Amino acid sequence: MQTSLTRMLLNGDEAVAHAARDAGVSLGTGYPGTPSTEILEAFSALGGHAQWSPNEKVALEVGLGAAFGRARVIVTMKHVGLNVAADPLFTVAYTGVDGALVIVVADDPGMASSQNEQDSRRYAIAAGVPLLEPADSQQAYDATLQAIEISEQWKIPVLLRLTTRVSHSKTIVARRACSAPPAPGFTRDIPSRVMVPGYARAAHRRLRDKLEAIRDWAALPGNGTRLHAPADGGAGDGRGIIASGVSVVHAREAAPSSAVMQVLMVHPLPNQALRAFAAEHTTTVVVEEGDPVLREGCVLAGLSPVATPAIYRFGELSVKRVARLLAGDATLEPPPPPGKPPQLCPGCPHRVSFEILRDQQAIVSGDIGCYTLGVMPPFQAIDTTVCMGASITAGLGLRHVLPEEEARRVVSVIGDSTFMHSGLTGIAEMLYNEPPTGHVVLILDNGTTAMTGMQEHPGTGRSLAHGPARQIVIEEVVRAMGVPHVVVLDPVAQRQELSDNLAHARMAGGLWVIIVRRACLLAAAKIKQYDAANAQARD
Image (cartoon, rainbow, N blue to C red):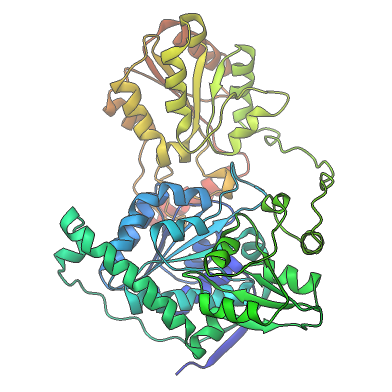
């Protein structure tokens, strides 16, 4: 029996965390990435068992293992992190789970803090897993519980897609009591869990049957009102708007005289409900951020929605943009007013490294982190940035093909958290396929995951909640892997030594890892406080 607990003002990330806690989620895993980071932080603060993993693939694999043991689990990441987790995602859709596995992915339309603008709804379709997309914090709370319900009932992972506005905007949330989770335990089921081809073929058929069963279940009257909200607003203009996520809110405000149907379960689509809605209106328009996923689904369901101008595929939607979209306005939109360009903090220890790289005219293969701001003036010292870990491997590619004099200018720059995420395999590649001129990797170690808000990682010696944890020491790891030249320097106290070592390494050849270590200026006081408390606890 579900009863009301309390009403709170929460953002979407916090709402997911509260729902997970109320549902008795046993484990939350993930990797920090805006706009998803606050989910696990809030879950931990509420008393949940949460942990940062080295990367999203590891987080999902730990999560699916727990879900094999009948636990309720959430795994969190941003959209580019889902790329990293795609390998286990596609196969756990086949294996299924015995508990509940909810993968919360936060997309970033408009790229407020991301290197691309991908649409995670494509992954749900490609992998064959259900996807729910809430429009506000209350729906984020409810959708988390619904995702757990679907996952447990059909033994299937479920994607919960948030976007930046839903993650970070606050609305009132009414929490409620939830059913207790089942007791953990493991049941041996080799044909379902071991995906050799003979078992995987049958598993694929089971997966497609599950999706059709979920589509039929969602069409039942009681479930339909939860998973595709009935049309609201007037129908005086004869227009029906189909929308998902925060676009529902924009559409209702931009077109109060139109009927708006919210699709909460974007995959599998409620085709029957969509057809019935379209039949009641003269015209049908789809409003969505990102790729035309809903529109394509509507066309496949036999609808003929009005074509949407391509310009609305880019960036976030707003009430003003939706009004233009509904009017069919395809004229070029005015560019947003220029804002203050981001920059490395005054006093940031990374500034020294980028000044040296700039002055030495290095070709810098960069990576994802706050140090990416080394591309901005006055440094302009980064030449490539693609994805987590690509600094080392892309730098190696340049070293392999450039003329010798130019190849010696190539330096890979990566941060400590990013190194733990995706840098170790780059070092393995560097050792296994050494370029003729060798290579130089500069690891900027500021003791935290600074870009996303000072989170911990395996190299800090502190857990997600900042308590004591076993520390992976970067220089010990790279030496153990076989890197012959490893140097550790303080960029501020040893500026000249850093410059000399970098110049020497580039010209001498061979394989070098230079670790530039000094605490992030914003995190230094907190790091000292955490380390002192942890030392006292150990004593």
